[in-house]
Length: 480
Image (cartoon, rainbow, N blue to C red; front, side, top):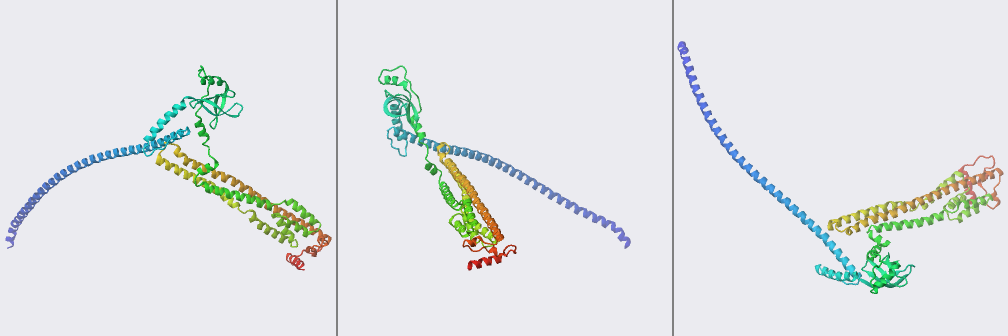
């Protein structure tokens, strides 16, 4: 059995290997078939994708061409819109120029006695009427004519006489005594320039026709009179500045009132301190303390009130008197410095209001430029004038106010310095007087009916009394 199994084993192994190889071959054929199918599928998909890509490229090309055409059309529309906006702006500027020309023509005709009624919405009838009447007026004014009118002679006197006019650019006075070629004298008036032209002008009027007549050519007098009359008054200039001018005017009025009030108050509180100190010193030298206090009471100034406080409390020790002086000066300081901060605020706010008016005027100017363009510069003059006027008036108010504040502050410091100086001088004189009385052991004031000085209670060589004790002694004497 073992031998048979050993003999059959190679045969069975060969049979198994042949069957396995057949299975492998079948599997390989199946895989080759599937690979061919997959390759065909891939080729189909690639062909389809190439077709779709070609279609997409064609669509992209078509859309790009369409986008380019739309961009060109949009650019053409923007150019058309810009040209139409420019035409509208030019039309507005031309309309403004036309309106100004019509107004000037109507004004010129009316000044020369030709009446013209403004037209309606259609300006063509008005233009035809202005042209027709303007031609007749130019023909009438362009001829040699003799009209009676005023002029100034060589001696400066104003006279009336016949004047030979050459259109509106030359004139000769025909007065036989003071006549001659005329020239502008300002404000639309005429004056004699060349008296030697009178003889030729009179011959020309008489029809003799001289070969040469001397005349002075000048611009039309209406233009000169119009320019001279264009000067505005102060009130018109103020109104031209706009609404910001009113707060500036209020600040100016407040600054003026404060100035007048401060000058009045400071003039009353600052009397002649030297004269007062001399009078008080004379009364003190004679021991007349009550009269010295009355002299301070009669004076209205701040220095007199401080000195009166010292004299009314002369029985107090010097440290307490110095405290009373400081208290009196502090009490007078608010009265002296009243309204000075308000002047400082006005000097700071007025230029800011002028700057506000400047900004407001420039905003109005840019609004006019947006609405009407820059064809007529006169349309822009209102905003620019408002801007400049408010700045000018703001500085006109601020600069004097700042100077007044500085001057008044210096005046207040001078008054305070006088009060301190004279109070210290009075304290020193009183202290020296007390020292002399203590040395003599008597009181000059007591001899004149005044209360005896409490410092005498210390006597020569005695220890100085305490401030509290001196105060109690003075109060006791006053109560007695």
